Structure formats: structure tokens, C-alpha cells
Amino acid sequence: MRPPYLRAIDPHWWAKPPYLAYTLREATGIAIVAYALVLLIGVICLALGENAYEGWLGFLASRWSLALHAMILIAMVFHVWTWFAIMPKTMPRLIIGGYYVEPRLITAAGIMVAALTSLLLLLIALMISQ
Amino acid sequence: MKRSIAPIFWLMFGAGGMLAALFGPALVIMTGLAAPFGVGFSPNLIDYSHAIAFARHPLGKLVLLAIIALFAWHGAERIYLTLKDMHLGSRLTLAWLSYGSAGAVTVATTATLLAIGF
Image (tube, rainbow over all chains, first blue to last red; front, side, top):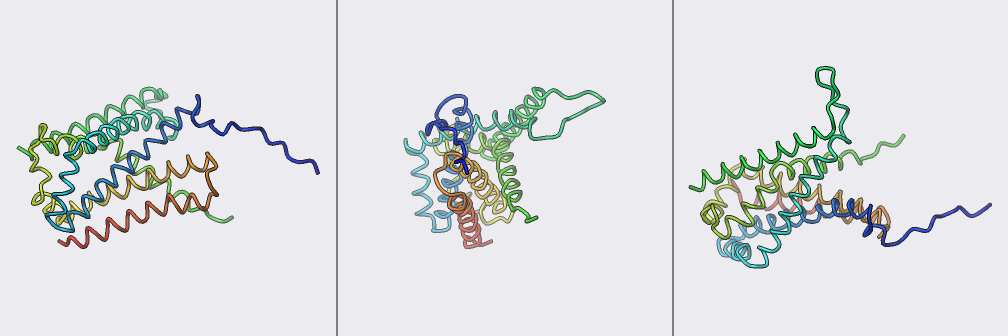
């Protein structure tokens, strides 16, 4: 039997266009996990008592935390954009009133809804905080 | 035909992704940037007495578990698929590593929230 033909694959394909765009999109998952872990540590400190929780708050107010959360926020916003950019490809064709809804429109609507829900959450938190 | 359990992971991935898309930026701004530095919010929004009251309320527990666990499962799916495409290990090893970590985060969050009590 002939050996099967295996096309040579560049081991760094994921760091080069066009795959780099997908790698960056998937990398937002790391930031989202990082945020979950920060919250989990906060909840664990909360369970340990007031002193431990104050320690966690101290970390949140540090320069390291500021840099970490700035990066997480950038990744989060990138996630919002890619999430709704993919949405038209993952759902069935949307037909309203006999007209096919353009994928661009679905993406734009999704991003607008996300902006609205995030803004609403911030406003509610601001009202509670006052 | 053997049934795949992959759709369960897709469901968690989708739920976490949608939650992050709708509320992620606001959550990060609130808990990571604004409240700790007293920008806009007063820092006592997340001080001990408010945080413990939130974590003791059943709805607060549900919110915390949903955010932490679903974010973990969402990220785990992305990390698993990327590492698999990079051929950085066998499928089974990578699946256990990524989904296993998300499962551990879920169990740890549930146990801690229960330990905090009602």
C-alpha cells in the first residue's frame, strides 16, 4: 500500500493570516476564563471572611489588576463584535415578511442589543450605588 | 450510532458566550475598573457587607454561579478547540484538561456559595 499523502503544515499557521483572526477570536476565551477566575477567587475570599475579602479588594485596586482588567475589557468588547459577526452563520436564514434579512443587519442588531443590555446593567448598578 | 455528548458542551459554550456578549463589558467595567477605584460607583458597592448580602441571597448565588461557571465553560470550549487544532496533545487529554477545569470551577463555585450559606 502506498503511504498516504500528508501535506506539509506550517507549525506556526495559527499565528499567520488568515488564521490569525480566528486565533485572536478564540483567545478571547482565555480572557473570559481569567475574569471568571478573578470572580471565583473573590467568592472564595468572601467565604473565608472579611479579612480575606479585604485582601481581594486590595488586589482589585492594584496596578496589576487595572492592567489585567483593561486587557479583559478589550477582549470582552472584541468578543461582543465577533460573537454577533458569526451569529448569522450559525442560525437558520431569517425571513421576515417574505424578505431575507441581510447577515449584516443581524450582526448590527445583535451588537446594538448587547450595547443596550450592558448600558442598562451599568445604569442599574449606578442607581443602586447612589 | 453512538450518541455524542458534544452538544452539551456547545450549549454551555453558547450560553456563556451570549452572557458574556450581553453583560461582559459592563461586568468588567463594574467589578474590575470602576468600583475598585471609586470611579462613578462608590467603592462600597462591592464592600464586604454588600458582597456577603448578595452572595447569601438565592438570586445572588444564581447570578454568581451563572457568570463564573458559564464563562468557564465558554472559555474551555474555545481553548479546547484551539489546542486541538494546534495538535498540542491528544483529543482526550485536551478535553479532560479544558472541560475538566471548567467542571472543577463549577464544583468549586457551587461548594463555596453553599458554604457561604443563606
